[in-house]
Image 1 (tube, rainbow, N blue to C red):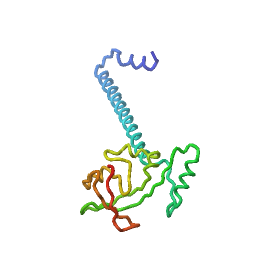
Image 2 (cartoon, helix red, strand yellow; image 1 turned 90 degrees about the horizontal axis):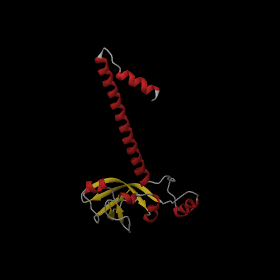
Image 3 (cartoon, helix red, strand yellow; image 1 turned 120 degrees about the vertical axis):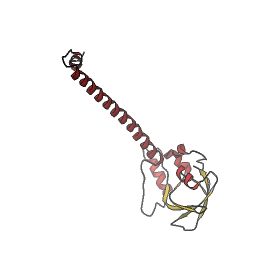
Image 4 (cartoon, rainbow, N blue to C red; image 1 turned 45 degrees about the horizontal axis):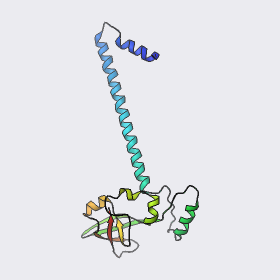
Length: 178
């Protein structure tokens, strides 16, 4: 038996004149034990939450994003060069910007991300988060988030209009996935 454990056990079970002190010692030890147990449980839960959050963030975005002011005109050439780098598994170009989405009389501001679905599958796991619909996007189809879907009461197959700052003329898209 380790020395520390032997001393603590001897102190706890010793016969003393004051029983009240023994009860207080027992309650104190139990309080510390419950506190330490609660701390361990909270740390374990937070560690799992942190890991899950990190996986979701990294899973829906790439690990590295290359940007250039004004955009990248020869993005296919850049993608091919990046894919030649050792240890690079895949790369996928995307466009990002702000837009307005209009459904009936409702208008909401959204962050728009234009992707190449064939390449995006290799870079992110966004298709894992699809609740309904398909990731196989065709011309004039979009994926939308669950929150946007519920706010505008949208379903697979519904039509929406997108208005961007670059082209103020509304463009219609069919919802392919949520």
